[in-house]
Image 1: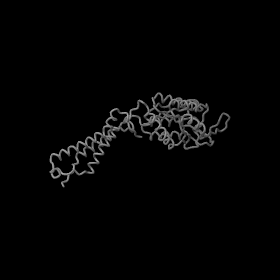
Image 2: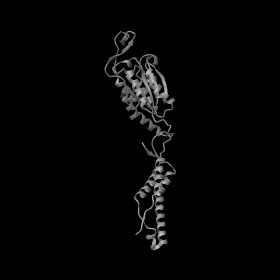
Image 3: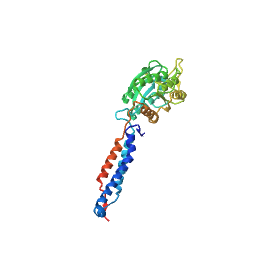
Image 4: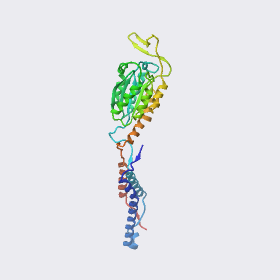
Length: 329
């Protein structure tokens, strides 16, 4: 998105004087022509000829004045070279046992890992962080521009990474916000990658606090809203997970819980696929981060006045090089 830095104290006076400068130049040319006529008298048409307007000469002059005017308006677009061009995103990856359900390929946890890895390749300039959680939340990776390394850490995260069992997304969201604040993120986002289980019930409240702190909370729904069994790979081969009473455990995606977290955090819920996560980043997360960054008083805008100024200089040189055509009666 482009705009003009109209606050320049020097640009406005020069832009206001530009039409007067053009009029002064045209008047000077006319006076010079009149002085030549007065000096040569009746011989003027035969000796000096009559000026004939040239299309390219006039076009070059117009382009020079237009380019100079645009340069004075100081157009601004894009980012300053070397500044972060992406968004800061902290993933809260659910590594609880229910994420091993295979209602999606290869399983819920594997689908979330694949989505994070795909976004790592498609989000240049972004910084990623990682918090893994089950019954408790643990920091796995601070904010880093090495997105591939963060994705690799997500690929190796297991249930043991988050301590005790259970599911507490609220604790993960709080850790994610702390991570963004320590990384001095101007506008960060939290993405909860989960099947929606919340044994503590504080996910929506934590998301509301995150939004108040300036971080939007989104949700990546992993799994299907149809009960299925959890398959565990054991030494005796694949077996279904059982509870303390010996009954097979059933688990399903809880879309209402994810929707509540996203609504409280000012975010959105998307399916747990790589395509959906990339669209969320490109259409929502990154634009919001760039808009907040540009609104920051300390933000240095990328001034592009050099482009129209270069056009103006080249057009003026072309105008000077093109001869003024004259014809004799």
